[in-house]
Length: 254
Image (cartoon, rainbow, N blue to C red; front, side, top):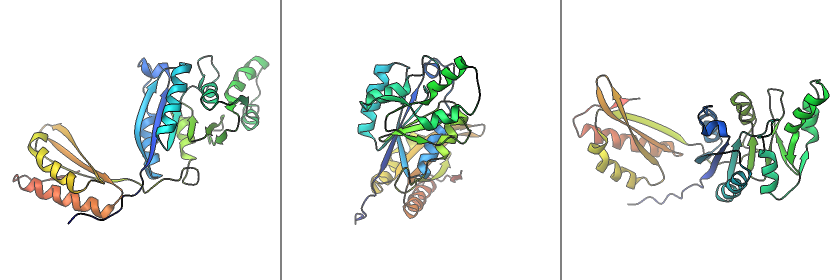
């Protein structure tokens, strides 16, 4: 008999990583992993991540496309004081509003004294679209901002993580957090593909993935189930365990 359970609404997120330095390979992005995990705990499922250059037309087009497609969009990079930090201006253009110096960010920046020419450069980090709401930054530096369903954050990992940590379900009402279970076996993906397909068909609301591994004592597959219903996850793991035993192989508990 089929399940009559009503699927919970999936709250979706997308990350836009802005920066030529990421695309060139000079800088390795670590923010995606941190943000995806944090969003999961807030009940937001990261569905896409895009890496784009510091080009106004590309940023504006990508932001407008993603904010219409996903519940929440998170950008990193391009809000510093140099000529190629154009994210704030692009957000103003995407939302068809003016760019201004946000007084609260100005106040934070002016706490640190500096010669006039240095202060002038620093104040570029206070630019935000009119109507933006700030994102806290516990490092003491300039804040990020939110406009609409788009959250604009720094690219520097320490600062980006501080901004991410300030977000909660009051700011981002999400769904139920996604949980996962993993079980492995010294079986190839091709051996278990047909059986996994049947198990997946029986549980359409749960993601079932297979990931090959290679170790000194052999190769095999890790099987990962991800969903919001803990009981259903355990049911699937039991089915997968039984499937593994059907090959006269012992499961590996990861």
